[in-house]
Amino acid sequence: MWWHENAANIATRKVVRGELRDSAPSSSSLHTTTMDALERKLIAEFLASNAAIQVQERFKKQAERLLAGPGKYGLVLVDNIFTAATRQQVYDFLASIVNLSASRSGGALEADQLLDVRSEPLQKLVDGMVAFHFSVIPMMLVSMEADRRYCLKESIVVKVISRGGGASYMDLDGRCFTQLQEFTQNTKLPFGILCYLEPDSVLDVESHRLAMKCKVVGRQLMVQSVADGLLTAFNIVGSLGLIVASGFWVMAIGLLTAGSSVYLVMRGVMEFLKVRRHGPLRGQRCTTFNILLLTVFNFASLVFVSLPYSIGTIALRGPSKFFLVLCAFVDLWWLVMWRPMHTRGWVDV
Image (tube, rainbow, N blue to C red; front, top):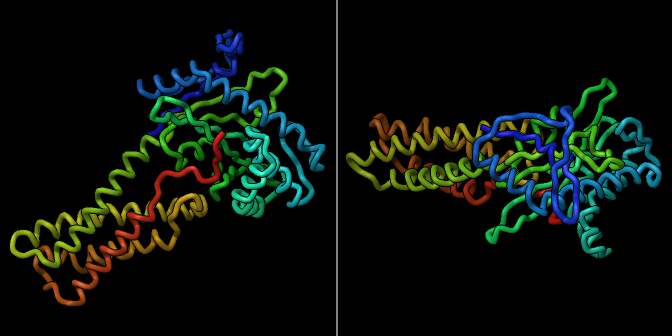
């Protein structure tokens, strides 16, 4: 389950003598959503901190960079939508926005390094655009460090408008969504607070009241990653344990291993469907091949070895033992390579 909150009140706060003070927000800028007490507390603490001011200032700088882009790169800006004539124009413009993170030190070398890091995913994003009508949505990830310091990372999402008027949202992780809300609900980011702007408010620099939204991300992924790790490790031990087990332990270990195999098969199918729907998850060290490998081997182990052997319908012979060892190796490979949470496509601020 995901919780949402529109933190538009931060956009209606004024920076006075280094502190945030509330001003009366307009009714159109307020949105009410449901979240639990912990998330309300986390977002409230963030909005009361200097990190919220820093995030808002980053959004203002990004807006200024976006507004300066059309004249520099030959784009046309109408109603917050950029229009380019060529794919190269789009790439050059987005590359300049991506390099905004390097401005924190002002070092040209750092900017070059940042561009090298992001050039490949950015090129793939541009190559995947079906039209050259787009808007740029800045994103900020706020995470809490061990010493209670806020750590800030930033990235962008590109909203592409097709000729028929449809929209798609593309990120530097190679994924594509039909709605911005769908993107924020399916993020692979670690635990933290995701701050972003609606496309229509990104360029609202004059009033300096950018309507910022905040959302706690990564909680479900934390639980899911623990479950993935424990059940995968159990499946490895169970597969190897079946080879040496005897008597009562054959049924006990076999049934438990079959149960963990069912879980892994379901997880593999779910991840495969996500990849097919939203594109390759380049930010994870997990490919479609790894997902299929996990699913096929665990399904075969469940149907042809662990479950039949545990209920006594087959005898465990040499080929079956070899297959169990092979399945354990595949699970170990998945355990090592699987990264449910990542920040690829994001850079430190």
